[in-house]
Length: 91
Image 1: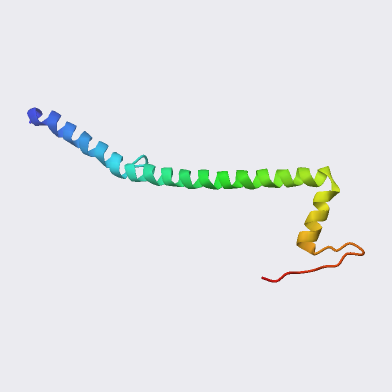
Image 2: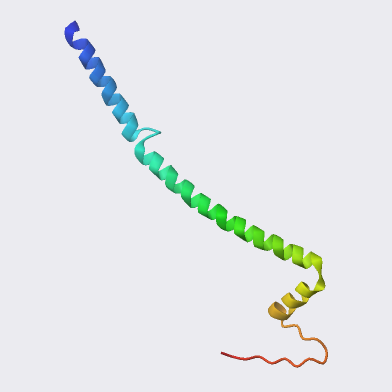
């Protein structure tokens, strides 16, 4: 009986280790899922950084002078100065 105790124990440990590898918290599928989530989050972070950079540039332009404010008012609000004629080309 003692002759089989060591191999049986080793096989049991091997089964437990394989179970952890395939089904446990640090399993192969869990790691793959976490890597996928990480890549998705990194892409979102890059997009947000680009948006932040664009907004910071726009803020600096708005702080710097009235020309940017006038341009935004013309483009977004349809501002027309006195003695100007507004012409809209429809495409």
